[in-house]
Image (cartoon, rainbow, N blue to C red):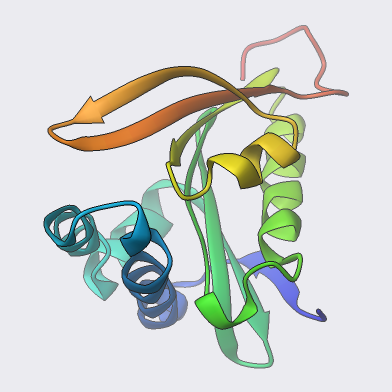
Length: 158
């Protein structure tokens, strides 16, 4: 699938929020209760996404002007990886993760931590992450995964 991966801009916030909420409601809903989906969704309003763009390294996947995916790097932690349900399984998430890893390597991050949803565990495992432990926020299960980065220089702090 031909899409562009680029740094997110503030004016992408509405589109990113829409992708996240749709993915939560259509894809993650099979693994989580409605209450969890709604609670998580409240963290990704357009205003909340604009704030994240200011705090993290956020990437957007776009076809033309339409946002179809997002991923972000927060220090050494991969966060908010979501792809629009209509284009899942077409390589968009893999390309977003490659961009996150490239940014991490530039910052000499030796390994990434990925707090994965139950839904995405297989996706991250296929990309080389391994499950380290389960984490719970109330009844919401997250699988904490890690991936060593090849080519990250071992000297210097990230």
